[in-house]
Length: 247
Image (cartoon, rainbow, N blue to C red; front, top):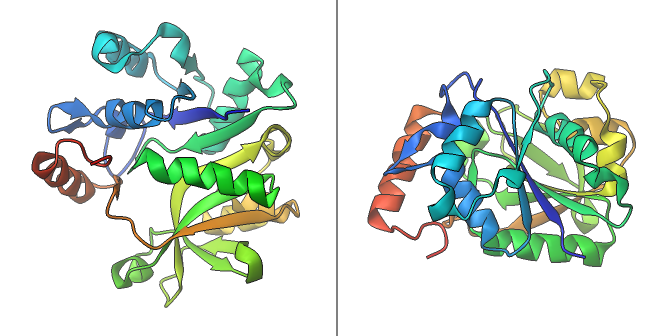
């Protein structure tokens, strides 16, 4: 069964206000991520906290192939995007299907759909309930306090996540896999580890869940947008290659 892609989107970003609606060379960030997700041929839902996001997508619905049913409105205050997706899956009944699989695709993570397809296949083959894409860390990422890092055990099992600047092997990419059960069990209670690190997947580690890390060693087809500088980098990339990240 193909997974359902949930894209948690909110307007309240601090370092780059209205981030998901920011213009990236004539097309918004959320539009670019939605388009990339649709390339997989799977069901895609934008789970947004503000109807301005819906209005924007509807204005561009023809070029995007967007439909009103592709949006789930979750105005409730949440601790993170996974909670927003859980509320959306409950509202729509998606979580009631025990055969369902979910890919949570963060709305600031533009990455080639090819990586996401391989990631899902590997999660199914590994028989895991939770997974996360990781990448080989660059020195800049190792020194960045805002970059989430992962400590990985044998067999690609993630021990925990942190933000401490250090020489670490792997950095987190904002693409997660959940079985219906793991998303349902995620709940709404912050764990001590999650509060200390501000990393949402640490809640699952506190719950005793095993998280599979799918490691990629090449991320040229990817750009995270968290700051104005990140936005400028992405603008340069799509200006040079209009089909980025699926060139």
